Amino acid sequence: MASCLTRRLFAAAAALCFVLWGTPEAVAADERCQSCHRQGEYVEAFRSCAHGSLSCTACHVSQGDLETHIAGRDRRGPTDCGRCHRDVALRYRRDVHYLKFNLLCRDCHYDIHTAPPRKKDPKETLTDRCTACHAAEDYALSGHGRALREGKGDAASCADCHGLHNIPLYEGLSGRDAARAAYTRRCQACHGDARLARRHDFSTGTVAAYAETYHGKALNLGYPRRGAGCADCHDGHNILPPGDPASALGPERLLKACRRCHDNARFAILSYRPHPDPDGGKGDAYIRAGRRAVGAVGTGVLAFFWLHGLIFWYRSVKEGLYGKARAAALLPPPPGGGEAWVRRFGPLAISLHLALMGSFFALALTGFPLRYAEAAWAKAVMDAWGGAYRAALVHRAAAVVLVIAGVVALTRLFLLRRRLGGPSPLPGRGDLDDLTAVSRWFVRGGDPPAFGRWTYWEKGDILVAAGGLLFLGITGLVLWSPGTTSLLMPGHLMNVAAFCHSDGAFYVSLYFLTVHLFHAHGLPFGFPLGTAVFTGRHPLGVLRAYRGREYERLRAEGLLPGLTVGPAGFKTRAAAVLLSLLGIHLGLVILALLIWSSLF
Image (cartoon, rainbow, N blue to C red):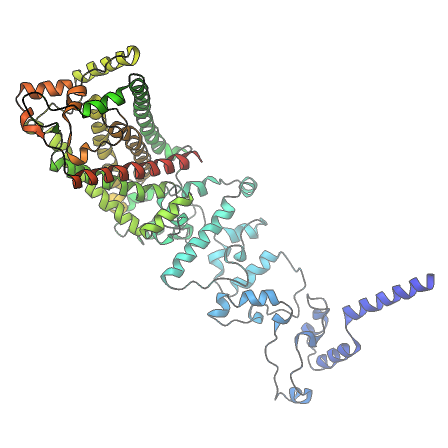
């Protein structure tokens, strides 16, 4: 039993020696090679290097007659490292060094006969190899390289950012875009790592803050050409802090970086914060104040009208007003003849509403994908527009249409109201009386109070539209051309404008997709489809039943006969129904996306 065990141990030892030192034939071949190649790198140094356990012919496969080789007439070709390192060789065939410069393994691994397995830290070894060709000062003295030399092993080496044996070849405009996206995400991978941040005392907030800017949102949506990546400002390898004289964030160099896209930018743009934190630092106090103001106003308006609408709906259902409104719409003409319909809007008002509605939806569908760039639906919508650039063009064109239509509509309402007829759409003492009467009705029930041409909630719609148009128009104009804006104001105000524009659009959209939609289609005298804004007319019975003061005023002033008309034609009614249904369904879809993205 013991002798059997001894034989097995002896056989295992022999096998180990065979693996480590090779066969007698391999040893003899090595001696023949070293009879000419007597340098230390092929003899003593080679035995202790990473491949020292291999024979010469393991890599230098025989390629002909030895005598011919010794005579120098049959030089051996390049060693095929891929025979053993197959996976590495396959990756390297996609590497820029192979594709563009035709570099071989030995061009980087030039000390293959002498390098021990672990001469020093692999990152330092790799850095030495890369900086043998690439300028050392670009990396080694500008941030990551300096940290690595100081012993911070977590600092990025060349391979951490660029890869190893599979560095992509980026060519042309599309290649530049791909490189910007790839390297920015690699920066975010480390600078968004909480453990690294704690270990080296930096904040992961810069990554999240960058994602809140237009640059970050465009890149996250898959359109890096429209936004600056990390290397566009930090100049690739130069990540020195702004206070360092050699930093890429020095004023002159940073302005030059801004002018690559904003060619008319001035020094004022440098106060723009590429990593804004609206909930944090001192430099972002203006953003925080602006967002709080917008949030307070938006929340207050929505809370009032949501509560008002909920109570109005409850009381209307309890009093059976939906059925009464339907009956009133079918009332016969008044005694003495006349039509059962009354004109409420003219062709100009109908056209303006169509322009406002269309531009509103275009603005929402091009703007909110940026606000919620991380949502899956945002990229799908942006792709449908053809990318961030085309979406921006549509957004600006829709903004111009909205502003023109809004100004015309408001001018018509406020300045020309006497000629057009009817009371002012501005809030007044009568609206307070109406609100008081409605409040009593909320509590006591019975018949609702009679209203005039403009109810106080319709005036609220007009004021929200006017205020939103002014606020979003000004902030949008600030963001239209940052370079031009830098001639007039400091860059940090662009941060304020960007956040306030986004928040303001959110609250205004929420108002019109809930409150205005309810006012137009959910109240008893508009339910289930308020088509008056498209047909320009509504039943005279509804005017008598729910806008009693307006009906009496028109009769007293002798204007009623001139406003009574026949019913709209079939085509007009069909178009009005289709437009109403389209507006309701598209509005509800956008509303659902906003609520989902805000909550989740």
